[in-house]
Amino acid sequence: MERGDDELEGRVRDRRALWIVVVLAFGVLVAFVGGGWVALGIGASGSGSTSKSKSAAGPDAVEMTRQGICKQLCRVTDQTNFVHPKWGRSVLFVTMPADGVEGFEVNLVVINSAGEVKWHYSAEWPELKIATPAQDVTGKIFVNYNPGRYDGVIILQPSSDSFVTFGSLPPAGDYRARFYSAVLRDDDRDGIYEIVQSHNDCEPSCAEGKITNVTYRWAGTDYEKR
Image 1: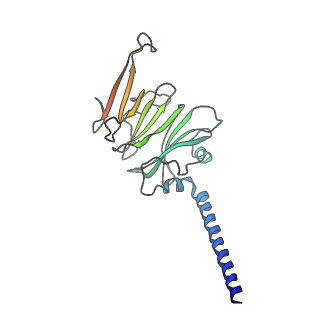
Image 2: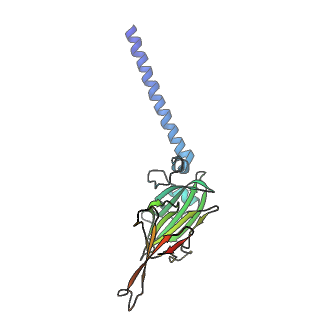
């Protein structure tokens, strides 16, 4: 009888353990569905990591369309966590058109840990990607874009109310800005990005023109030619 009782108790313990696993799995599923992509995508950042994150859950197409982020079906292609002085722990997302969707709608969108859209920029470009690393030691966020010909650099410095862009954010419907036809470098390896901009004089034609490079370095309040 004692042996039978032990076997019975063992089966009960196994069933209890299995039930606990099922309950926990259900709880995780509810947290994902109820808490949404913001709770998992940003809450997982802990103390506010500034590194790029591919594993954190991003907003899905339905949610982005509902919030007016995307005009057409889209997908998150890049993201990075950062801490904003006003918005707190936030994520900068990059979206591109979903597979099979025509057009070149791209978006940069910042969403805080409460799930609120705090900043949004939209354009029509075939390429948009957060730099690697996303931030240099000055705390600015850097984004590379290409409207179809030359690369450009967008700079986002978190400020007391939004971002300081140093003239790098192209106006609506355009692609030209202060750092168009430019790339990021850190040749001196001091952890601070330099911006190298190329200029073609297109004489006698752009195919035969002379190309000159100008390097911009951070000078404490703005970027200056060096």
